[in-house]
Amino acid sequence: PERPIQLVIAGKSHPADDEGKRLIQKLVEFSMEPEVRKRIVFLPNYDIGMAKLLYPGTDIWLNNPLRPLEACGTSGMKAALNGSLNLSILDGWWAEFYDEDNGWAIPSADSAGDGAERDKLEADSMYDLIEHQIAPRFYERGADGVPKRWVDSIRHTLATLSPALSADRMVKEYVERLYIPAAAAEHTISASSWQPARDLAAWKARVTAAWPNVHVTHVESGGVDAVPQVGDDLHLRATIDTGGLAPDDLAVEVVYGRARDGDLLEDVQHAPLTLASEPGAPVTFAGTVPLARAGSFGYTVRVVPQNPLLASPAELGLVAVAE
Image (cartoon, rainbow, N blue to C red; front, top):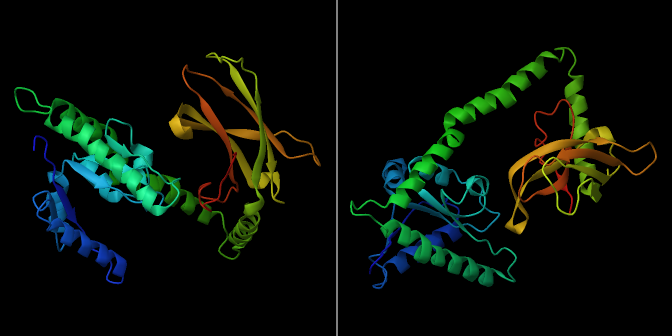
């Protein structure tokens, strides 16, 4: 009674998605229960006109998929650009942009024993966030009736997410990182001979077939004391099982940043490791990371495909990470 909330649900299932239709039917039936009918609203016939009202009129954008099934999360991005704060599982875009000041993260229980246990754990976490963090902040108001901390979060969201999530940034990045390199690559290929393209296609097939056998088998580190100091150099040496590929087919990198709970890294940077082994020896790569700042530090080693004709190392969707 003191801090009421209302859930507004809208959306459509695909015409062939029978399970989605059944889920919506259950939601509609539940929203008609006397205990909750004033707290849950289902809006049928969702379309762009309705979206124009919902996005700027929503205080919290709730997105609770099962991780890692969120395809992207563009609805949450649009909500953020309209000043809404997000409440979501750390999946899709939210895993990349959540910073603890632009909304809330529902802890994922993807290691639970079964689906029912996972649903209960994640639901309990979501309700706990709403009851003890979200609703109190929304209703915490000064003499002028304005929820200052809430408005501060809105301003932070707009300031930090608008540049990154804008269509201007997206189109610029496509042009600079994909279209211009693709146009330049096209000019290097003779109209009478597409051999570079054929070679790249054959290379992709070979790398994709071999990739299940590519592993980071061992990582050694040294050069720092038990208590690292700013200015120390962390020396790394990684042994790689190439799966039969040539070392030149692979880019081996150290990925490092501030260490967070759950083996998460933030402020992530990466640097190449160079081939350090002799022919016939185990394939090893080595490199150095300078410790340029104080505080927690974490790192891992990853391997991605490497070819000068690739538009991006992520083009094949292949990566091997030290475990």
